[in-house]
Figure 1 (cartoon, one colour):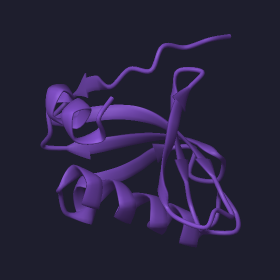
Figure 2 (tube, one colour):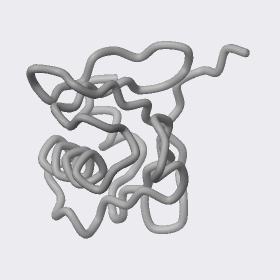
Figure 3 (cartoon, one colour):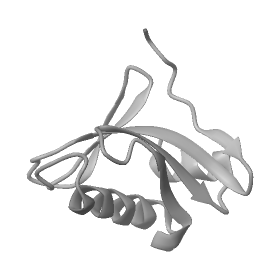
Figure 4 (cartoon, one colour):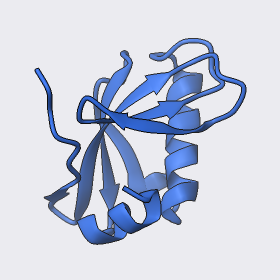
Length: 99
């Protein structure tokens, strides 16, 4: 199944789907593939607390918000995660992520 990458409006912000790829040399946006934003993380395991913290910190920095505005609402223990960003519009998220 192919899904279109889409950042959607949610109450008070935006939401997007992210797939993390671990054990990378750097933390960075890798691509938009199969409808999902792929992000490379230095962390060893996709579902552990260190990977989730790295992901939240990276997205908060890219989106210019505090870490408490970025939340993993689904998929915390896996590679594919649903992320919400409080206080940003879809347009602003698109602009900051360059999507």
